[in-house]
Image (cartoon, rainbow, N blue to C red; front, side):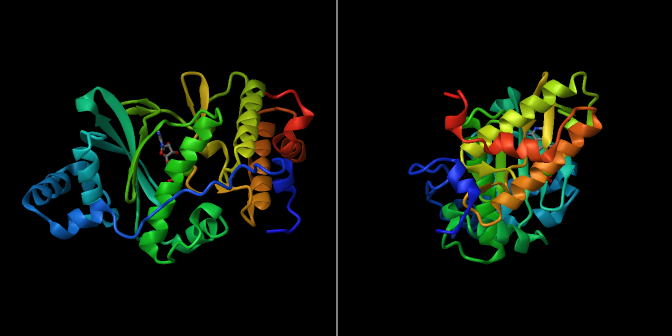
Length: 290
Ligand SMILES: Nc1ncnc2c1ncn2[C@@H]1O[C@H](COP(=O)(O)OP(=O)(O)O)[C@@H](O)[C@H]1O
Ligand SMILES: [Mg+2]
């Protein structure tokens, strides 16, 4: 990897963020084993879930192994009840769920193993050093994608970017903190009236920079993947986020900057995509960040 890449330079020499290798094995998960075995307990659990109205919504997302993944999450105590869908998207559905017997609200994102866009998913994974040697079939890609979202949430959190707290990942199911309340999930930046767009912009800009310095480019950042909750902006939907070493990282970052700058310009903020890009990629040594 010796091509000229301005992104790599700007995160500093030697210790380059984003190079850490995360051990992932998506070949045969415990959920797959449970689904194969289909013992009585699992069969009853699956029947209970299938009978629940909320889950009839989109059966295609729920093959046996997906039920088994949810079953495992329930057994492990990460989920105790599943509520209504918050969102049904192309690649995933997001449900409200409860944990700790209703003490805590969580969000459960269920990726479709039959996602039609899995080829694009693979393109995002290829070139990411964390996913070298990944098998190319649909299941492996979607499972790796789910793990990547979990890992990216953790990394963003460690970098000081407000994100939903990642709780657990099982096969194609991710459990995270619910932003908002039961029946009242947090709105996106697109859906709120901003009292102070200038400050909101400064926050988002700072989060983009922190992500970048942690070796990540979001890759799908816009007002639709920023949630507003308790006066704070949270970054979500980081499944596609790539490390700065990805061949397309620079293009993704430019696009993110355009989306964010366009949104805030419409809110009356004096912003420009190029200035935002420069801010995000500014080398650490050039400012007084700790
Ligand atoms: N942790 C969360 N808390 C509350 N709402 C969420 C959470 N995660 C996702 N959502 C809601 O679900 C929608 C879709 O989630 P997202 O992760 O963006 O998936 P998609 O790939 O379908 O865009 C979001 O726009 C948001 O409204
Ligand atoms: Mg989204």
